[in-house]
Length: 87
Image 1 (tube, one colour):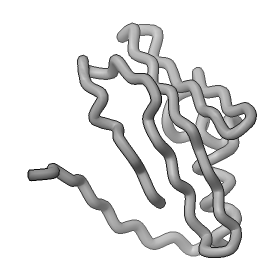
Image 2 (cartoon, rainbow, N blue to C red):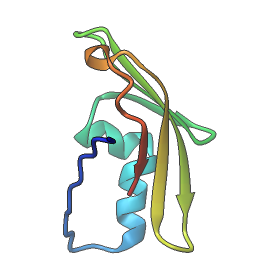
Image 3 (cartoon, rainbow, N blue to C red):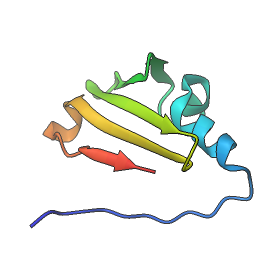
């Protein structure tokens, strides 16, 4: 059995603005963690107060307006549960 968490959000903006918010560090720093870096389709996100780090590979598809992220490293809450995210 695979456990999944699914969320649906509706935004009053264009898909490219949402894709930028999910793939550009200066946007991610506003809504997820201030210690975020994205370079060459790799994201590194840290929460130093907790000692957490999450590393993701990130693929953006303009054709179908999706962002796919795959967790390559995580010690957040002692889990690698980030797995694959498709947004």
